[in-house]
Image (cartoon, rainbow, N blue to C red; front, side):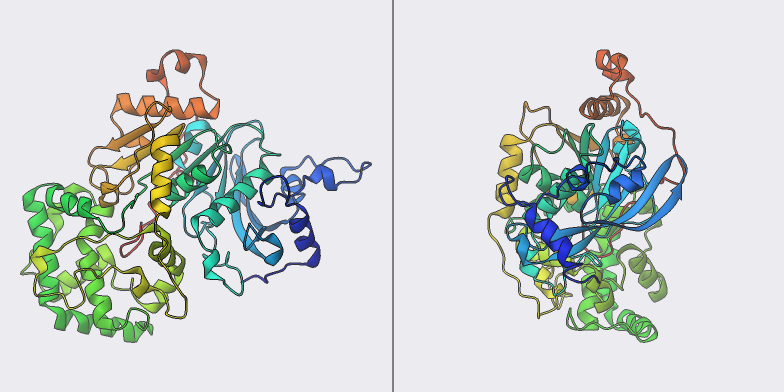
Length: 482
């Protein structure tokens, strides 16, 4: 954890930077801080560290790039920057200041291992990745949880962009998958003039938190009836065998010193994981894996291990939930959370059917209050005002049951990858759609060649595949998390 104030000087710089941007703090440029007789820094690390409030955690070697893990001083409350600051972690994968830049967000912790998002590989650009506020270590101390909302997070992103745009002056694209796609959308809603395009992957859009029938329709139609019945039978059998399977969970908990105080009991944690099972299967598995689903008459060990592999019995322990407290807080205050029906589990649930209430997964000493209308505002803005936004969904991903629908006629695009799960990417689209999507991304980034501009069907990524940087790693979240 970082102290609330790094130094009095850092706070003064931050406060003094508030002005013409409507209350959002913007740091002064390095040139404004530099004495007239001192030359401007030319090394990229020096230029980054010349930004007021930016500090280096480490630089890691990456072939063809410079890679920096950094801290940046942010206000806890962008509307009242004098109320304190915190250190927000970010990374920069530096290619060349003459190349465009991708601003990538996961909506969770930032990985400190170098990697390239799909848009970064397409445009051969730089990449900036931001850790979402309140995910440790990017959490103010003490933590005022009322300052965790989508507007504050969008303002975090805006300040980082404003500081780095002075170095990376070419086009910028925002991207992210799942909660990261939501984050990219919210950023565009609050700061629509920052980015030159948005590529959001598998981004859920829970407009009305009280109406979730889209999920029921998804689970009644996805794949084949044979596959659906097989999954439902195994899920039901897991609850039928609650006694022996919870005994296995207790043995694991004792061995790993896991506790279940937040959710209430080991038994409720067990049921929650079992209820997540079918969702988790479709979120991360392919339809071909239906053949591997164990039969309902399999042994206790087989059933326990299979459910554990898909939805994770550790997911609702205090130790695992602590990492994701910021997500559950947001789900219970602004984002919403899916609720769907389990007719095949009638009589077997102790805590359902509306078990997924985010309040149950957040420590009771953190106050929460639902803010009606926040997602409706975003949805309305996307429907009416979105420009140059692309959404990519997987046909077999439950999170895509409620999705964004950007304004027509604004150079916006929505693609659905056939048979894809929560890892859907442009690269999985049919050839014609894939080329069209790639051409659009290149155009927004300002790097579409005359050939591609004349014939989008000839568009292709501008980088060669790199096994270390481009391995597709879906942010696999155990339990019902986007």
